[in-house]
Image 1: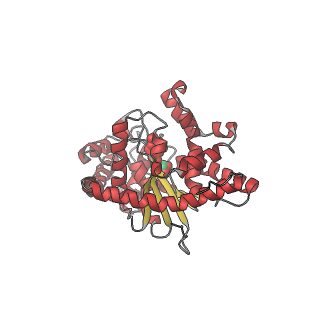
Image 2 (image 1 turned 60 degrees about the vertical axis):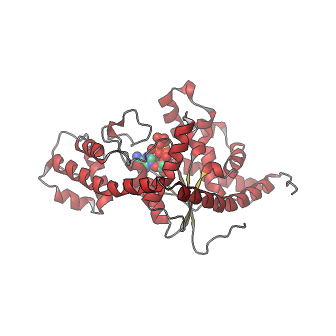
Length: 341
Ligand code: ATP
Ligand code: MG
């Protein structure tokens, strides 16, 4: 099946890891919501990146379950397999194949500068970090370049990896001739970094040391509501957006604004003289109202394995058509002898 670009539509590509059962609010606001929006304007490819998940230890049964759960959550969030290509990374072998080529044009020092590796290896203890964790940004480069993506919707933590992607695409194109599109990060500034509710200077993360500040979409809503009500703020009482001096309050305002569409300035006015308690209770309620149908939809998709399997099979087929074409071009440019069929 030859792939064809949809005229007038730029390509978008992104991925999410099945490293935990549930997505968290940072994943949704920072990334997944943009995936849904870009279906309307882009020829969009979204994948569950199981190859990336195994860069840290995973239990096989849990990984399998979490991968299916990730697909169910993406559908529940609004991805429509008729309007985008939704697939599992390991179903498309071209990712690891192009990943190898990218490994071979990346400098060791260049890879060593990736801050995500530094953060993640520090969390586990440097001795336990795998070579896979070290090279995962390079696999991510291949993920993006295979689809000739123009836009990559991600959170702020991924900006450096998109820069690496551009550098390697330019290097390959320069050495071997034009092959890859140079992608741009698609980062929505306001929601690019949702913070942990207990440690409001840190990013909300699936792999946070403590779950107390982590808002999981599939948790019992009453559990999340409680987390919002006990969110860390500051010793003032004024509801004001100030990321530097009031990171906790600013984070709550960001979440409120993102879920209701109300501007920050308007919210500051709304909460003038009301104090933090009212803001926390309202954000808790707004979240619960949004997440309740999301959880129901996720359970519906999970309860229909045939549909889930069909979505994954169709997605893999569509993705492979594009990926195979790009890989063949890259193999040719680099000087590999074509295999005879
Ligand atoms: P892990 O801690 O295992 O890396 P994660 O929470 O970072 O998990 P990923 O699957 O790595 O989740 O990331 C999926 C997408 O969510 C990426 O585009 C990432 O930039 C975005 N993202 C992750 N955390 C946040 C956050 N706190 N705020 C905004 N976007 C986020
Ligand atoms: Mg991450």
